[in-house]
Amino acid sequence: MKSLIKSLCPPILMELYRSLQKSAHNQFSGDYQSWEDARNSCTGYDDEAIFQKVKEASLKVKNGFAVFERDAVLFDEIQYSWPVLSGLLMACDNNSLSVLDFGGAFGSSYHQNKKILQDSGVEKLIWTIVEQEKFVQCGKENFQDKELQFFECIEACCDKQSVNVVLLSSVLPYVENPLEILREISRMDAPYIIIDRTPILVNEETPSRLAKQKVPASIYKASYPAWFFQESELLNIVEHDYEVLAKFAALGGEVNLAEPVAKAEYVGYLLKRRIK
Image (cartoon, rainbow, N blue to C red; front, top):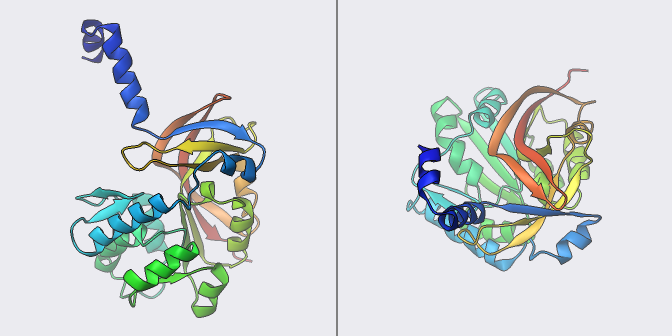
C-alpha cells in the first residue's frame, strides 16, 4: 500500500510528507566538546516556556482533565512502560515502596504507575522527586502530598528516608555531568536502580557524544544539550555495585544524529545491587 501511494503521489507531495514527518520528531545534530558550548547554542532545559508547559499539563492531570502527561504532552489513557513497572514492583519491600525519581518533574512517572502499584498490593508508597529549584518550589506548593514529595538534592532526600529504588527516566541525557550523578546514585546502595529512555549509540566504538536536541514546535519551541552514551562507559560506573538484570527497548526507538551522522537507540536497564 505504501509503495502504491508513493507511485501515485507527485514528487513534490512526497517531499512535503517527508518534511512533515521529520518536523514531528526531535532532531539531533552536532558533536560539542563541552556542555558550555552546547548550552550556548540552545535555549536550554531550564527555559521558562518549558517549565510553564510542564506545570500546565501536570495541573490538568492533578485536576482530572487528563490521566497522564509526558514531556508536557497530555494523554487520555496511560501509556505504561512494563519493564519499569516490573522493576518498581520488584523493589517493593513488605508491601512498601520508596522511590527516588531523579528529574521527575511534577510526578509524571508517579501518576503513570501509582494505580497499578496500589492495585498490586503496595500499601505504603512514598515517591520523592529530586529536581531543579523552581520545580521543587512549585511542586511543594501545588503537587506535594503524603505520597509525593520534592527535594533539591539527593542528600536531602536520603536524610529524610530510605530508598528502595532510584528511577532515572529520560534524565541522564539532560544533565551536565551524568556519569558523576550516576556514580553518586550508585553510592546510595539502593537495592535497585532503573534507567529508562536513555539513548545509547549503536556503534560501541563511538565515544559518548554531546549533541543539540531540537524539540518539535507542536510540543514547545526549545532546544537543549543531549548526551548520547557509549554503553560500556555508562555501565562501567555501576558495574562494581550493581548487576544488569535486564536491558529493554524504551520509548524513542532508534534515532539518527546528523553532523556527523550516527545512530542511537533508546533503551533502559534494570539494575540490582550486588550482594557482598
